[in-house]
Image (cartoon, rainbow, N blue to C red; front, top):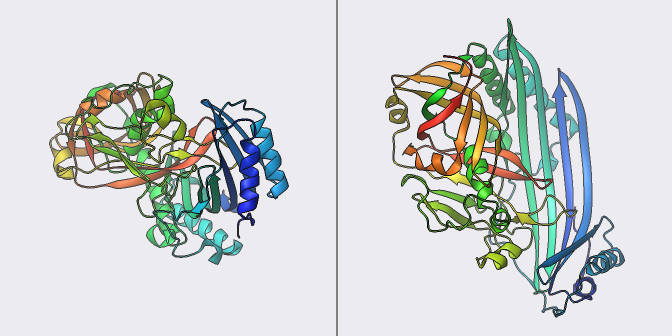
Length: 465
């Protein structure tokens, strides 16, 4: 699969049309994406889908205003028409000239060691069957198994009026298992969903039968759980489990569009001490083959590692071109878009709390009474206040330094800045999770990561004693 041939004359004609009404900047984003997926539900393989989507979008910026148009016809004429449509939305005063085009190589690459194309339809179906069978072998209480395998191969061309031009080849592969277990009147679910900006080598690191077993073991474990208590207590986040809390409760509030709107609790707080000395966090799109990694962001800024918190001090925001200029900040390489049909906006990539110096086992042993969260569920966050409510999918009660029994139905209630300040231990271990982050109607792959983290006090909602 290759991108359509657009030579310098084609590209200059498209950008010239985009700038024709006084645009000060224009870019052309062309994409081809091949997607494949297969699922199994109730032991039936279904939804074997292969898709190819291709198109291009033209953006024009003038005097702080943006116009955008896209087409799924990748001819010179169709792209010029899209450029003229975008230009019609602009009435600028200082038309830019188009600089000499120069091809730039991505500063980071995340090659797939095994091309997903090696796997045919029957091979894909075999993977989800293996997940299903392994999950059902765990326990007779397993009632339902849903499993998916999916891969995407994306080729991108981006050219802008400042002369930047690059192409990038991106491959992502993911497995997922969701298991329902039931006993008596108790029904519980378990989830396992690894992914990477990589190819079929993901199956070596996360064998399908292992993915199925882990999801089933979580569901079966929770059948023996008790209702979670409702009280303020110490909470320990297992490695990987707390990344979603950092992503939602802190990360979104540090995306520059939210900051620029005055809708973030972190607005104007660069340089302020907000969190514990033990907390350092980054957004890093350069990590080799991590789920949210890439070479260039979706407007041509090189992938970067942005420090968000350094020993508790708020250090930076995540920017795109527009918000970097508006806030007087450097571009951090966080402009991302779901596809050619979407504008780029500031988004997280791989957002991690960095490991500390504490022994993970000792972090738990020092807790007299608390909650050990092994997996968080969905939640709600208000970026303006930092307030959040998160469900806990898998958790244990900690009593006198020991994990005594699993609990269900727990919610974590708090606000991002307060939780960062109450971190009193950070482990030497580390793990990651992968998800699809939704914002403004767009979904993009986002990596989440953390070591064992202890929060001295947080409100836990539950129905037990």
